[in-house]
Amino acid sequence: MENITDIINSDPKAKVKKLKKGHILQYAGDSNALTFYVKKGLLRSYIIDSKGKEHIFMFAPENWIIADLEALEFNEPVQLFIRAKAFKKVIFYFCILY
Picture 1 (cartoon, helix red, strand yellow):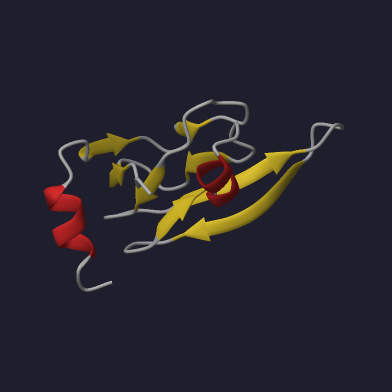
Picture 2 (cartoon, helix red, strand yellow; picture 1 turned 120 degrees about the vertical axis):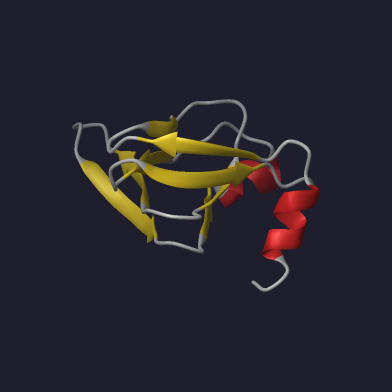
């Protein structure tokens, strides 16, 4: 993870965004899957089943990366919701190109 800052800083698509708690960055069904690097704060990824119940897939604390890897790898619609868990934290996000 030492070189992650270099990668992020060299990506012209990278953006810094301040989010409020509960802000949804990615919705299931979205056609464009993104990768998020948590600079500060906490993100949560989850699915919602047919009965409307949320099932947490993972949490991403500071300095972690979170994404729907299956959607990225196979160029499929996103299956995971990704939501900001902490209030007004800075999130650094970028798209990984293969």
